[in-house]
Each structure stands twice: as structure tokens, then as C-alpha cells.
Length: 67
Image (cartoon, rainbow, N blue to C red; front, side, top):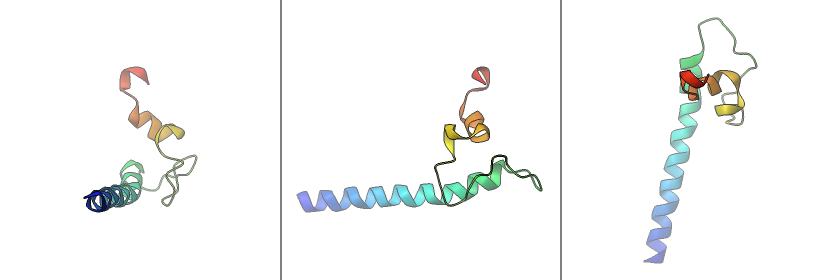
């Protein structure tokens, strides 16, 4: 039983990783205006710049009344 629960948990974690990996490029395509660069730049292969660590993505996570 322990082996099965370990395998299920590992597969669930792998699936979440796959989902977030594909979201990085999709979000970058969604927030970029055509022909306008994002400053500072966001990298498609790293999550460290995203979220509250970046002015643009942080503003999208923050409710408008707190912006």
C-alpha cells in the first residue's frame, strides 16, 4: 500500500510541474503587447522572475484596490 501511495503522490507532483511549465510561456504571450518588450525582461525558462518578484506580473496578482 505504501508503494502505491508513493507512486500516486510522485505522479501528482510530476503533473503539477508539467502544468506550471507550460503556463510560463502562455502567460508571457498573454501579458506581452505586440512589439513592446517587458522591462525588466521575463525569461520563458525560469519562474524566478514571475509572480510578485516582477512589477508587471505582481500587479496582475494584486487586487486593483491595493495596487
